[in-house]
Every structure is written in structure tokens, then in C-alpha cells.
Length: 382
Ligand code: DP6
Image (tube, rainbow, N blue to C red):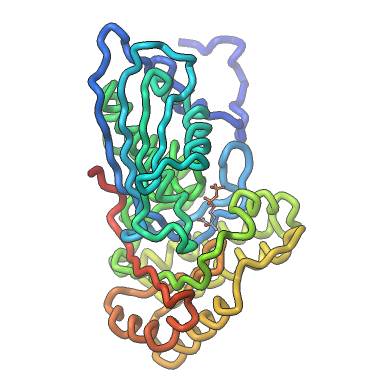
């Protein structure tokens, strides 16, 4: 059939600020056949970016593709309880929110605003009474970001709820794609936590099917050694971050190096993917450390400038370099938007590296705290 005349030559704007992809006004519960009350629980992990997402546009769209390893031990457990509201209510989200068993007003209002923004995607949410019970496997004060695990766990609960009510997400690949899309709207990096081992978020010719709207799994494209990698998180400071990720991303807009940075990330992704395909640890480590330093360099040269590294972060980095030079062990560091140092290494040297942490690094961690983590299988429904 010929296309409607008025559609001829029209192009969808590339950077449309919308959630149109999954808008679905048909996802409304038939009130003459209401569902029974129920609950859904997901455990979802954090992830550590190797190529960093830093800079965004539109509604949570990344300026460059990023690649992460999915972790195993740093998780959020989220239970979503739902019950059909006999009274139509005011069309608003009806939510109770508990964090580690206690009502939490700050988290509740953030989550409510997020769910309201998702009503075009999940219009049935306004027909339900919702209770969210959530908690992390790591201490809240540990300075470990919980937005990736928290937002991915919530997104998974929402997609499972849609499927329980309407049977619309039966295909696992469709399910994961939508969960990743929804997680991204909550926190960009969260979209990568949906997949086992490793994921890429952001359009790149290097990965078939990649998109700015959701992450895609890349486990099949990486060498086995990376599926058995460890990431021990050296907690240098448990303080709240001085600058939120959201504000940090926004500062990239005025950063004179921004365009060069986005081009660099694309080139580094190509090199890193090749190294991860072939199992080339030295190239892997070089790129990963360069990315960590670049992220913090970008913060230091933004306006206003800020520093999230602490003196002990730098001491630990120097010690890792010295240990690598001395022993030849493939031990590398990365950083997220904070002072804590992630120590990355293959599982076959776990005993040697744990001894190194104990002997040389622990003293530089706040209260000697190290969160041991490793590459994992992705989220689980409980
Ligand atoms: C440095 O995903 O926390 O960890 O999308 O505003 O929620 P928002 O930001 P967020 O940023 C993560 C930044 C990073 C790098 C990364 O994970 O890729």
C-alpha cells in the first residue's frame, strides 16, 4: 500500500525527547474482570562501566556508547505489591514505599514522579494500589551507587507486572529490551544491568542492534576470561557525593572538550571490544584505566570544576600500578563518579590479589571496607 501522501519524505527527528517507542494506551485493566492482588520480586545487580557514559541529551539519551560488566554481589531486591483499586481514584499513582523495611518519603516521592512519567508506557499503574519494598545488599552509606541496581530492579518488576496482567512480554528478548528501556528512563546506567556478564548501551556500528534507547547484551562477543572477572570495590569514602551524576552529566554541555571526548569514547569502544573478544588483557587494562582517568579529568575541567577523588584514591591507584609492575599480574583499576576504586582482575589470581588488598590497600579504605564483587549472570526473579 502506498504511504499516505503527507508522510512522504518525513523523517523522524533523530533526537526526539519522547518515550513514544513503548507508549501503549491499550494497557488498561478491564474493570469488569479485575486481577487478584499479587506481588513480584526481582533482585538486580549494579554494573561497572569500562567505557563511561558521561554526557547526555534529550530524555536520558547518551552522548556516546558505553560498555559495562554486570556485577553479582552489589544488588537491589525490590518487591512490588499490587491490588486493583475498585474506586477509579484521581488518576494519580497510589504508592507506599519502604526502604529496608522503613517508610522513606524522599525515595517515595522520587519513585512516584518516575512512575507518573511512565504512565504513557504503563497506563494501568493508575488503576492499582502499589507498595514498593526495596533494599540493597550493600550498606547504604558505603558510597556505592545504587541507582543502576535500584532502577533496573524496579523496571523489571514493572515489566513482569505488565506481563502478569496482559501477557504482552512473553518473548524473553522483547521483555529484556523493554526492561532495559524503562530502566534507562530511571537512570541511564541502569539499562545495562538487565543483561548477564556485559552490555553495551548506545548506538554504535560495532554492535548489531545497539541503540540509544536501551542496552544490548554482548556476553557472546567477549572472551571467557571476562566472564570470570572480579571487581573488588575499595571504599575510600562513604560520604555522600559532592556532585550528583545528573549534575555531572549536565556540566558536560559546557565542557570545551566534550566533542573530542565523545569521539574518543567511540574509538576506545572499538579497541576495547576487540581486546575483549580476543582476551587481550593488557589492552583491556590500558583502555579501562584511561577511561577512569578521563572521567575524572572531565570533572576537573568542567565549569565549575570539581574533584571527587580523595588523596587515598590516588595512593591506591599508585599502589595498583606498582603491584602490577612488580608481579606482572593483570590487575587494573576503574572509577565511577566518586572516590572509590574498583580493582578489576581475572578470577584465577583471586588469592594473590586478595592478599595484596589485605596487605597494601585496606589501610587506605574507610573503616577498612572492601565490597567484594565479580561478574554475574544478571537479574533474577525471586
Ligand atoms: C560515571 O547512570 O548514574 O557511573 O542517567 O543521570 O542517572 P543518570 O546517571 P548515571 O551515570 C553514571 C555515570 C558513570 C558512568 C557509567 O556508569 O557509565
